[in-house]
Length: 135
Image (tube, rainbow, N blue to C red; front, side, top):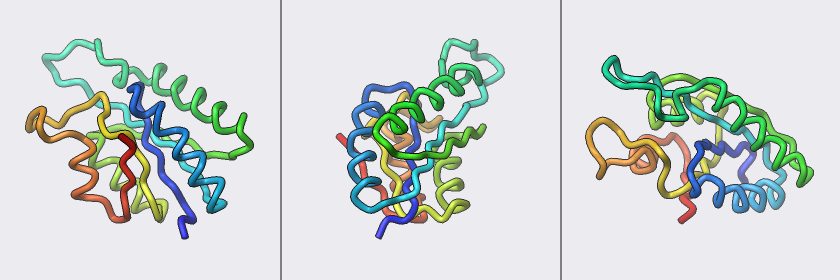
């Protein structure tokens, strides 16, 4: 049913909590697991205080997540992309033929349009496949 599961991750608590659901779904359906992290380009007037703009921090995050799943006997692939998180997540889901995106209910990033329009909301509206949101 879910041949390919995309799990976009950041350093939020919600992403860490969603990992248990991801492991259960992937094991139950024998799915291919793709871990994605998006490096955001900082605005010209913005300093690099956000950890998700550091390629080194993102690489470590992906390695740690891959090790977590590997420890449970779940092979995974990692992808790192640069861009706006919601659009990049949906583009990657389409590119890899994802059957399901699993993500936490609230990530670290918000869209430029404001705090009420979160990355999660944007992904739900733009996704080419079902999205499972973990509260």
